[in-house]
Figure 1 (cartoon, rainbow, N blue to C red):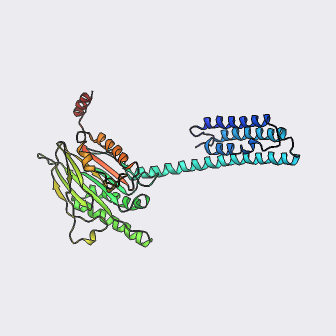
Figure 2: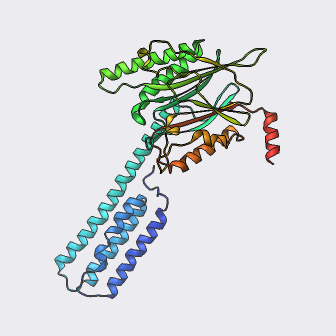
Figure 3: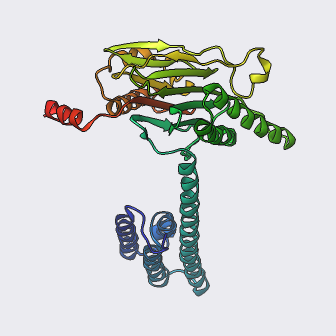
Length: 377
C-alpha cells in the first residue's frame, strides 16, 4: 500500500484536526496571560493524525501544529524567558517529527500485513475450493466460517469430485479448531482427492485417508506436537445405467446428515459406526459403507458439529433439523444463505468452533431455470 494513500475518512479527520489546532491557537492569541495555554495540549492532534491519516496529511497536520505552537510560544507568552520559548518550540518540533515517523512506520506495517494476508489468502484458497462446488451434475452450496479470526480455513474440510467411479463427496472435521488443525486436514483432503479417482471402493478411499493421517500423526509425535483424529462423511453417486442411480455412504465417526425429499426433512445416520480417521486401528472391524437410493429431487445438507453444537445466548444448541423443516422449498443457494444468516442470528455471531455447511443438489437444467425465473416474476 502506498505511504501517501489515506485510509477511509482520512480527509475529514485532517480537516477537523486542523480546525481544532487553529481554533485553540486563536483562543490563546485572544486570551494573553501568564496562565497555562490550551495549546499545550494540542500535541495529541498530530499523533492522532499519525494513526488515522496518510503520510502527506499527517505532515500537513504536523506542519500546522508546529506553526501554531511556534506562534503561541513566541508572541503570546509575554512572561516567558527566551530559554522557555526555545524549549517549548523545540518540544513542538519533536512532537511533529515523531508524528510523521509514527505514521510512516504504521503505513509500512500495514503494507507488510496486506502482502502477508494476500499470500495467506492465496494459500488457503488453494487448500479449499471456493463454494459453490460443481462436480458432474451436482452443485454444493454452503459456507465455511473459521473460529480463528482472520483465517479463511481451519479444522473443517470438504470436497466434491467427479471421478471414473462416480460423483464423490466428502466433509470432515479435524479434532481441534482454527490454525493448529490445518495440517491434519490438508493431509486428509489431499489423500481423498487422489484416492477418489483411483480406487473403486469407497472403503478403500477411507483407508487411504486413514493412512495419510497416520503418517501425519507419526511426524507430529516425532516433533512433540499433538496427534489428531478426523471425523469424515463420504458419499458417492454412480450412474445406474438403465436403472436409477446408485449411492453409497460411509461415515468415519461423523455426525448425521439431513435429507430433504418431497417437502420433508429426514435425519440420516447411514453408515454410522465407523471410528474417526486416525483411530481406525482401535476397532476390530473395518469400516463399511451402506447403499442408499438417491432420487432426482433430493437435496442433502452436510455439516460439521460447529453448526449443531453452536449455542444461543441461553445455552441451547442450534436446532438444525427444525430450521430445515421450514425451508424445504428453498433452492440450495437460498437455503445456504438463509441458514448462515439464521445461525449467525442465533449465536449473535459468536461461533466457538469452525462451522461448515454444504447444501447439495442436482444442478438445474436450463429449462428448469427458465421455469423458475418465470414463476418468480
